[in-house]
Image (cartoon, rainbow, N blue to C red; front, side):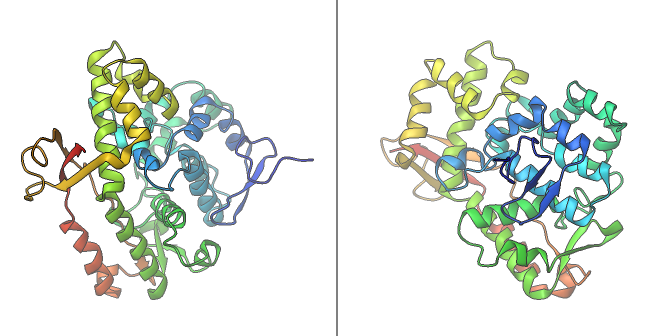
Length: 342
């Protein structure tokens, strides 16, 4: 019996992405990269971060990475450099993905760029004649590419994120394979996703739903606790931020469990997240520390993600102003909160 077509271990040299239904035939460099520790590690990092504890978004960062590779291979099958960049675009992510971004100054883009210049990734790229600097430039948007093009426009990285999240949350009514057939690339150097007006409405709906999830209890509650615990771990132990950055999710939980000051709340977060309460800052409910007798803390979201598809090659504000207004309304979502344990 041969390997299943969804293998992520690069044994069969091909896989079929279960979301998009795209079968990818791995290039030699892609197969070799999938055998390295930085890529394998992503299979043990939740794409949804701490919200994987409170939602059904429990798929891994590697699943998303392979989805981006599949999309890149679909639109640019012969572009080895772009495909390689797609596979490497997230190797710098911290445990719990975006949840811990910024903790102790850690930034997954900078970490990823450093990993490209370090073995084993550097050695693999070198064997296949690919310069790490060329990959870094693509991921930085110089030159613009479907992975990092015009700011504010939907690229292939964010497309996979929104659709994969929407599918896992049950809010995607369209078969992604059917959706894919209505998508193309346009804009400066064909760097942005373009589609028809109806499909643009579907994509904008996914973007809006993701932002609403990001500002909801499902994300705010577990994320606020995980960030506090990580900070306490760094402050209370000899753990270096660089070591924290390379942990898997399970390694992070193990470290939190091994540190007496963080052990009880770490266990509560995983076992009793329903006890967490969240209120928008400045409301009567939030008060200085939650309801009377409760001990709480302030939490601010770092960023709300939003990007717009093109409609028949035109910017959303020109082709579908109503949809553009829906995205602008995301600026009104709350970003500061008070959180406490009940």
